[in-house]
Amino acid sequence: MLYQGGGIRGIAHAGVLKALEDNGISIEAIGGTSSGGLIAALYAMGYSPYYIYVLFKRYAKEITELDSGMIISGVGNLMMNKKISISGLKNGESIEKAYDALAQRRGIRKIGDIKNIPLVIPTVDVMKSKEYVFTNCIPENKTGNVGYITDISVGKAVRASSSFPGIFCPCCYQTHIFLDGGALDNVPVIEVKKQKVDKVIAVNFKADDVDEKSNMMDIAMRTIDIMGNKISEESLNQSDYVLTVSTDKTGLLDVEKLDNCYRYGYQAVMQNLKEIQKILF
Image (cartoon, rainbow, N blue to C red; front, top):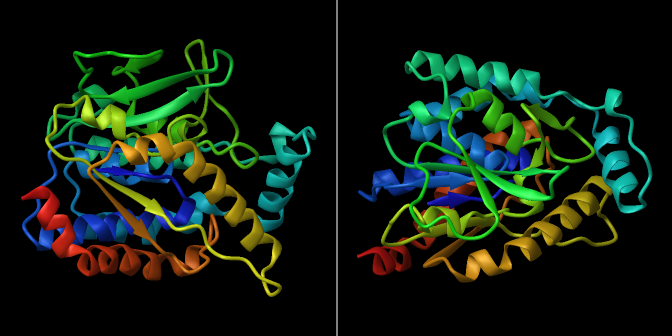
């Protein structure tokens, strides 16, 4: 099971997990990028899908408190190659602290301490132009130019993978400068397959349509989805099943739609349950 990034929409992944569990489908390995990594990390540490949903409701506003104008400006500046002030962005410390605290509740400090199931969370070192994967299980078949890190704290790992360019500051760790893993590996199918699982279900988000009534945030999200899905094409083609979730124009940090997104994830599984079961069984 693996997940795509997508800001607050990422809670839809918890809805997907809940629906799978309700129908007797167990998860043997999990991976995710950006917000997908936030969900994957909690699940791998033993938190239930519903409790993950509760945690997001509790911490979402604190973690995502950011002016939407900054998002639009940041995305626009990236497209036009304009400089962005690092001091004007969120530093991601709230995400790191929250996750380190949640990990400590389970007696976990570093990502390598997670024992429940294999976990993979991609990120990108912008200085080396190289993908790194935070994991508790380094694969035997280490193909490609990918580095693996197990001795990083859970909080730092999810913070690094979630550092979306133009919104969050880069995440520094040792000699690395990490940004959102979606830049190279938005849906980490290949890395999950390296964990010797039989079948891989990929979850991605449908790119919302835009029209004359769309605002700047709608257009920004559409652009992000197009870029993310283009990056993910090869990975999605290698999955055994792609579950596409529609989230009804939910913005990157659209906290008030969190409940809806959880429901959208659950409904997506239920609407495609027979196909999923056919693939898995």
